[in-house]
Length: 607
Image 1 (cartoon, rainbow, N blue to C red):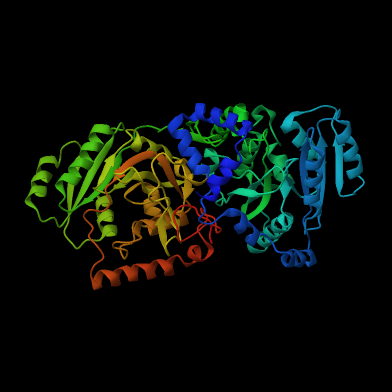
Image 2 (cartoon, rainbow, N blue to C red):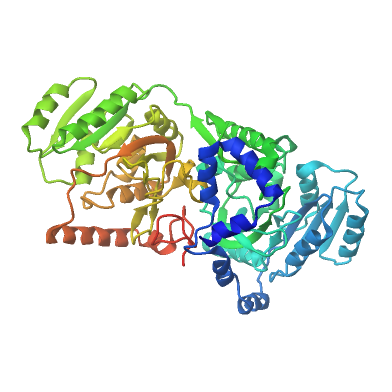
């Protein structure tokens, strides 16, 4: 029995049993046990010893304390208080006092003036000149109390800290260092910064559930407030966006972060665990089901964000708490050109085409089949049967197999403003798959959209590609059972990535042109990764949309890497990628976290 399972049974109590029954009612039996298995921490790389190894050592903390800062920024820590337990308050304040960065102040806004013990404690704390306290005449709610704390701040930057949470001792140092580093590199300071975080038991006995985040991903932020803690923003940005809005109580942080990201000049992610979110029976950290109203507020926050961005989409709650789906409305009826390379494999191609015509709800599409050196008479007979009917066109590529060249050739015959590269060994699952892809692809700034693909046994074949996995790039969560949402629900959330597979990839025509098409020196491997990176380099987003679902029967026509010539070609393609994309391979995929493994595909910790 794993350590995670043992801990689960040790924690059983009336409270946990009661909470479990509520979750069972919410999810249903099957999905409840799927979520439960996803929550049990694998023993592969246990987090607690990993955290102890990766937290700042005493030697490092001493080095930080000794640093002399040139033109240091002052960071104000804003904390709304409401009937804060004295020991929680003391521990929170001690975590701020322990900071290795000295240029800070702590701003405490007390929304429970009737709490005499808390008032006495605050009076004693205010004797420290770095700690400022305001006793509000009444409780103004989370938003009002937070605004009152921020209004006290005198620093150029403000960080948000909940009254029962803790900062790592190097939190402010890492924030200040990131501000200074960015200013040196770009000539300007970032206006918004955030760090990684974890959870800690109420008695501080154990750290668990690390949230190791990607760099800024607007689509992931619409799906879930992954930024959360530790959030630091320029005081000028706060004034620009107007502070916290009590109309979104419960999701006021999500609303505030969305507005900040819309207006911020520079967003910086610090990939270190610098914030510890304390769990308790009443906290959202331990019991998300306790604050259902917060998720309705989250829907409205995302809807308001879309409206400000000029985007038309329907926002709905997912069963996973705090997670949302945005279904973007397609504007007009643009033509989609589906490009399918094919060699022989009549039945495979027929299954693909039949599923498209029988299941796809989007009707304005054409299909371009790129024939490449087939050898069987039956496929040519099939081409005669379908060519020119139902918007199908067969074009002939008579040179050697080159996936990039074949797709470029097919796209040259495409009439649509949206191109859908599709393997011949695909079968449609979700009828609105093409509409889903198109809704994302139409958005300004989006260049490519990829789908969620399954093997025939209902395990994940593709849920996005991470640069660096396996050496160059690899698909994430391969083999995950269908219905499981994996680490931080990543498998099931719309998000921005560095690459998706061309087995099912919709491309905006202008993005294809900007990237110069597929690189024909990459005839087999990494051509889709390279193409996505070129589209990203041209300034477009690459989006993973899990609501476009298909089966992928995995490259029946490609053949194996079983000759010396193929091995040499593969090595040449690896060297091309290493040379062309050395910077991202060296610095790491911005949509992945450097603390996660590059040798495994399941968001394991880097050991």
